[in-house]
Amino acid sequence: MGHASMAVAFVGIFVPLLPTTPFVLLAAVCYSRGSEKFHTWLHEHPRFGPMISSWREHRAIGLRSKIVATLMVAASITWSVMRLESPWNAVALLIGAAVITFLLSRPTAGAHLQGGKVEDR
Image (cartoon, rainbow, N blue to C red):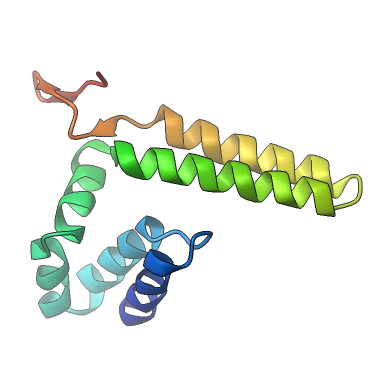
């Protein structure tokens, strides 16, 4: 499962509507339970390691990731609403609003650490 999650995450780097971060985090969980070698590799990776640490320690998401994810969700939901019939377009709007609310409610990774807590700028 860890390898499959990393494969999907890799594809997500190049495919605009496929997220990368959730699949990297899923791979980290899978590797933590199945492969110490790949778990260590992922945590020490220069690109993925800080992302995993920020999420694990502070439940924080990087600013660039927040912006890209929010824009992609908004574009996807807009496209879906234009294509779907009622009541499915309302369902798409609710899901999109929930995802965007979650993304924006998380602390921003890389923000100043103050007293052991992440604070948004």
